[in-house]
Image (cartoon, rainbow, N blue to C red; front, side, top):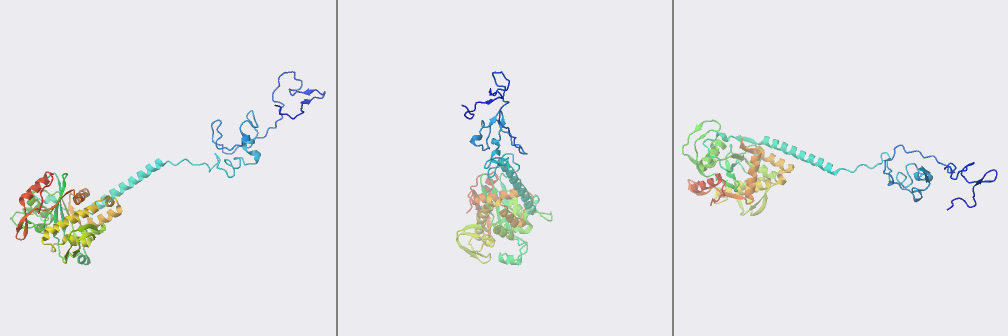
Amino acid sequence: MNDWPDGWSGDRDESGRRDDGYGRGSAQARPEGAQRMRHVQRRQPARPAVPPPARPPGDRSGYAVPAQQEPGHDTYGGFDSGYNTGQVYGAPSGGAPGGPGGPGGPPGPGRPGRAPGPAPDWRRRIKIGSIVLVSALLVTTVSTYFWADSKVRREVDLSKVVERPEEGDCTTYLIVGSDSREGMSDEEKKKLHTGSAEGKRTDSMMILAKCSSGNTMISLPRDSDVEIPSFVGSQSGKKFPAQGRRVKLNAAYAEDGPELLVRTVEFNTGLRIDHYAEIGFAGFANIVDALGGVELDIEQGFKDEKSGADFKAGKQTLNGEQSLAFVRTRYAFAESDLQRTKNQQKFLSALAGQAATPSTVLNPFELYPLLGAGLDTLVVDKDMGLWDMGQMFFAMKGINGGDGVSMNMPISGQRGGNLVWDKAKVQQLVKQIRHDEKVTVRSQ
């Protein structure tokens, strides 16, 4: 196909002969080359200051190129006529209108400050966040441990207890609720109906045996008839020989404190006590209030002016004042001391069930007030750590959930108004606990 204008037959020289375009004076049969091409070469536009990123050969992605500008149009031997740069339309050197780098178009490659950043590395972010969270929890846990450990009052020295029974397979705790009014104002004493008696006496006593075969909680009535054995004074260090004196169990505590109480319990039961824990009136009430109250199902309503108790039957939430009245009431019942010990067991199990939960232990806003409320008035033995206290609470919680036995010390009768223990049943009970056997003994 002839692309030249019709009628054109080539140039002629001065003599009128046709010039075939092969060059003057040439007798060759082949053209000399492209020397006579009439194309006007245009000056290449200036390149941008920042070169575009290298692309594989033939890769034209990201450039909007009109169809008439595809390779093959106006390109001769690698020479670009200027159409592919968009300069023929008067667009800026960055690209054509609406195209990459042009007005209204997406940012072109290589333009400073406009290139998209790398995609976020979520795996790395999650990893770093996890490390920060674990580190924060670790620091909080360690600081909480040392803070709480510093507030515990380790004032009972069980090494002063003499002639002790052999150790058993279970861990045993002697848990005592005292009527200590230490730190209480006159207004608090009146509100809690504690009176203003000096000193302190045991208001409740129980043995908690933590065993793999099942936990057992045994209440020791304060009116239990027991013998005071020989002992070494906790303060004087003087040895007092046995005199065969029979007294109420709480008299041992009143005579020489926790050490003589442990010695008396061990002597009359034959069971070794591993740890001692005691809490007073104020600490007991404060713990309950810090928990927001304790939910309890009271089977039968009762009222007692001395303790301030006034309860109706049914499920209800008791605050600190009401809880203290519930565990102290004795004159409202026919079997005053035995019924009171049952109420104390029931309440302590419910208290432990609410305190020893993940929502409390793992929540610093719940845990700190709880520890702060109870640790100031909690007295334990010198070898008892926070781990042992936690084990004690979880053992009581297990009993509340039905995993264990809750009972009174077996009673066979009375002597001078004091409750006499059933020796045969006590011996069997102690044997089962000592050898970590399932407890089958039951009280009345």
